[in-house]
Image (cartoon, rainbow, N blue to C red; front, side):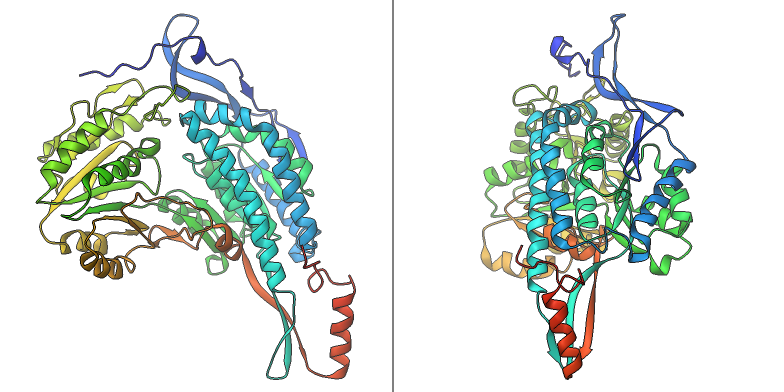
Length: 533
């Protein structure tokens, strides 16, 4: 069975080409005259010759070592071993810069949302949601920073010593964001990093790169020179030479663990390299015998297939008790086959094209491997392909020798395993290389209670009768084992990108006089930061 995408019409014609010829270094939008790379959407449209092809959206600079080191030098100079204008600036002044940026960013909402739809095929409602959530994240981060600063507005005394404890910056950050949330997830790294007084070199993801270009001017006009430096190109050509210098203090990356390890290995002083990493996950859903199937199926649809399953927080394998697996599979298959597919801007389109050119082929390889080893596609439309559309495939029964059992598919293929004893999925989770989240579906508190106690030691978020997710952004977002290093959330990210540091003085008349004067003067931005913000 072949699933046909919608016919291209006038609404699918792309005319707002973005040919980016600038990059941001040292507070200047510099012209790029070197090689460029075309950026294509995996949304197919009809070209002037009548052929259905991937859509050209524009181009970006294809940078290599020289501009990468130029950007690094700019960030290093701006930090200036802690002496720079930005790391020594008053909290209130840094906050004003962030507020200015957020206000400017809102002017580009429609342009960025349009690029989110075209570049990574994110549906219209989710594209608006990602933009608005990112703006909210900036304001929430500002408020969280104010709270931290207010709480540090005092000297405390222990054992005859006064101490003024605050959080200080770490240095120079290399920031590498993901393609699936190229705005929100990236800014969840970049924004807390810079507000804490660090300086940054930022390279957007391979997909979802053009949508950063409208914001270049906003960054330039909002921050002092060198605080934010933005480059374009392939990670191995830009990030690798930067890491080799040893001048990066923090590697902030959301992506694959292999990339994180490779970059760490390039750093000559790995012992002093801080890591803030969001990595892979193989989040399971565990369906207990007494689960409310209607609710469970609704949440499993969202958990497995929101944005086509291209989320680190997606449910990537389902364990269903053998007593209800047949009923679950039947209802789940019908629900999946009823999902609407279409182009991102089409009303109620839930399933959209896959943004990566070769992703559909990879998905089909996983499906064929599973079928060869005994699984079946249990939904009628499952696995059908047309151009960049792959209809979600539900695979059952899945066994441990199948690739889909082990790999993080990051796409619309849903493996289901039945279990007899609850220890079976628990043992799978314990043996897994990942430990981000789990969804537990059931109603019997006497069963749920002991499971929560175990699951809380295997993952970092246990979702009761609900899909795995990141939000709300004020809640911790992290993982065990290979899933994460450090914690990202509004509050925790500020701590991930800073270090506790303090001024101490023995309790004696002379020191007390000096401390009093410092608190009442503006001679030290560290001690007097206008706390009542």
